[in-house]
Amino acid sequence: MLTGKNYIGNKLSGEGNIFFKTFNPLLNEENNQVFVEASTKEIDEAVMLSAQAFKQYRNISGKDKAAFLNAIADETLALDDKLIQTYCSETGLPEARAIGERGRTIFQLRSFADLVAEGSWVDASIDTENPDRLPLPKPDLRKMTIPLGPVVVFGASNFPLAYSTAGGDTASALAAGCPVIVKSHPMHAGTGELVASAIIKAVQKTGMPNGVFSNLNSSGIDVGIQLVKHSEVKAIGFTGSIRGGRALFDLAAQRKEPIPVFAEMGSINPVVLLPQALKENKNLPKLYADSITLGTGQFCTNPGLLLGVKSDELTEFVKRLGEEIVQIEPSVMLHPNIAKAYHENENNAVAQSDVNVVANYTNNVKSNFAKQVVATALGKTFLKNPVLHQEVFGPYSLVVACEDVEELEAIISNLEGQLTGTIMAAEKEVTEYINIVEALQNRVGRIIYNGVPTGVEVCPSMVHGGPYPASTDSRFTAVGINAIKRWVRPFSYQNWPNELLPDELKDENPIQIIREVNGKKTTNEIK
Image 1 (spheres, rainbow, N blue to C red):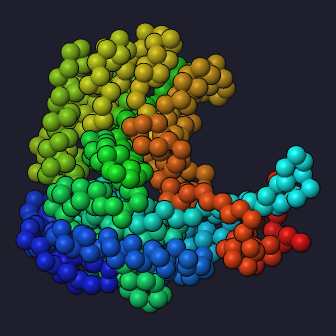
Image 2 (cartoon, rainbow, N blue to C red; image 1 turned 90 degrees about the vertical axis):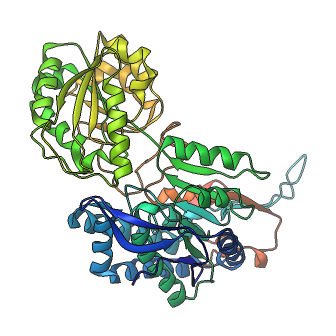
Image 3 (spheres, one colour; image 1 turned 180 degrees about the vertical axis):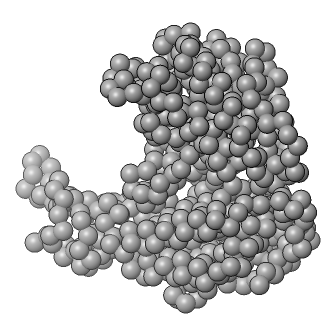
């Protein structure tokens, strides 16, 4: 049952005086539940409770954290149809999408549970002492990662489950040993409260400290600003726009004690269409029409830029892409504000000099539905107009015709950082374009070969990040078990008594993790 209140640790609280409702974009009407924005007092209480919980939670064993994460998964599943229906009412997305995203969320939680239960993720490294070394004795040094402290996670508008309340940022931070305060996204506050209730039940069932999790409502940016500025907050997780992520990054950098902001932001995900692929693969137009419109173009890996060298085949591809994309029925966007922003940004993009619209769905659509658009421009036009480099969040893509391979390489090299890049190539063709591949590698976090960028597999080898502004730190991923590395720092013990060391670094290796001992990976004890 929804209350519209905040979770300050295990307590429901609604002391604020700012109220708001979520919106059903499919029905084009407000939902009934009223939510109350967290007050300054409640924000401070949640953060201080989190800081207190950290003193205990940081020392919770991997097996106990795993039990907690699995309990969150169980309690989320137990929400059953109530969660699915609330999700749909706040997003306009179909039940199948809600069920699929819930499944991904559960998988993420259980993946991190398995990771911390095994324990080797802490990267334990031991260099034993050598008192006889000349000219100076060698000390005993033992290193592992330790958690940063309370983490604030900002819910994402386009993934109310997988990137929000119990999503990848929250799951990875809790796995790392960091308490989490979620700044719930106002577009899906009901979904957020339900998932928060599941987390709180898991806290209580597994005996985790009160304050290890809180969920705060907000109708705007004020709650988020206060959280980032709070001295007890030690890191930020964000998925959203470049404008929003950069604002948080700047706020965090201006603090007396600056803190890391791990923000996954905008991306146009360039696709390179190599000449032979265009000649041989006649399914490319349909493949990319489907990818551009998937989820109404509201994925961070939507292919917003298609690049090719001028040819008859590229001209034919553009023509057929336009024909295919207008055959697809438009779908609803997540919120009227997102639909409005899409139409404004798309209109601005196609209004630029020397940009031509190839295809534009022209039939009437319901409120909050997005009409898909494909436009074209020459390489020289794209190079000199930075407006064309910016993401249009929605079912829009720009096809750029380059004069030659040199111009294609120049365009790739001048792109901002991106989450993904894609190479569409015929067999062995890619070997003729190594410079293009290397230029793309320098601008993205992941390269796809003969596929589409939409779809992010949750696995250890996934990198969901990239050079700025795709993310604020290209060394880390926001998806997969390695996302845990964002919330920890390396820490060394020198000449520390064995009995006082954490289990991960003790001579006897009581939890049997893989460690690097004097340069060799082993699970053996030190004798």
